[in-house]
Length: 264
Ligand SMILES: O=P(O)(O)OC[C@@H](O)[C@@H](O)c1c[nH]c2ccccc12
Image 1 (cartoon, rainbow, N blue to C red):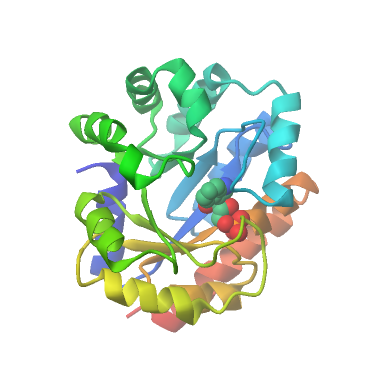
Image 2: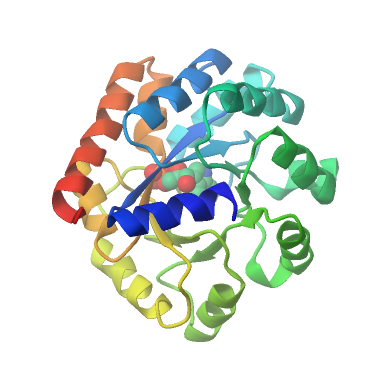
C-alpha cells in the first residue's frame, strides 16, 4: 500500500474528511514552498499536491498561472523539484502528489520521471492535459511501480466514461467541481456531489473534490459527498502575497470546520 492509500484508509477508519493542499514548487521561493508543506501538515493537511511549474498551464486560472511564472523566474526545473522532494522527505511522511503538464514529463521520459520522482519521495501524479483515453501507457508504468496516476471526473463526464475512469482509478479520483480553470469562485457543490454519488456505484476509490474552494464553508459544502477536498488558489494566493501565516490559518480553519461537520 502506498502513502496515499494508507492515508485515505486511515481517514476512512477515523470517519474524517481529507484535506489536500496544492502548492506550486518555487513560488514565491523554494524556502517558502518547503516551509508551507511543513506547516500545512501541522495545520491539518492530509496530502500535499506539489505543482511542477510549466510555461503554458492551460488548466490554471490567474493565481496559479502567476505562481508558475514566479517559479519559472526562480529557475524551477525538474532537477530542483527533485531536491525539494528530498528536503520534504527529511521531515515528513505526508502523501505527496505531483501536478504537472505532460510536456515536461514527456521530455524527461515518463518512465524515468516516475522512477526518479518516486525515489525522491513522490507518491503519485496528476496530469490534467492527458485524457483518460490517451493515458494507457502512462497508467501501465504507474501501476507497475505502485505510483498513483490520478483519474478525473467532472459534471460533464458521461456514464460510460465514468465507468472506464473508475475501473482504472487508484489512490483517489479528482472530481472537478465545474468546467472552468482553477481559482476561487462561487460553485454549487451539489452538482459535483451528485456526480460523486454516481461514481460510488462503480468504485471504492476515494473521491476528492476540487476547484473553486476558498473558505472553510465552501470546503464543508464540497466535502458533503466526497472523501476529501482539494484547495489550491486560495492558499497559493496568500503565499504569493507573502502571507504564510494567513495561508496556514485558512488550512487550520478548514480542518476545524470539516471535523466539526463530519467527524464521527
Ligand atoms: O485552485 P483551486 O480552484 O483551489 O483548484 C485546485 C487546484 O489548484 C489544484 O488541484 C490544481 C492546480 N493546477 C491544476 C491543474 C489541473 C487540475 C488541478 C490543479
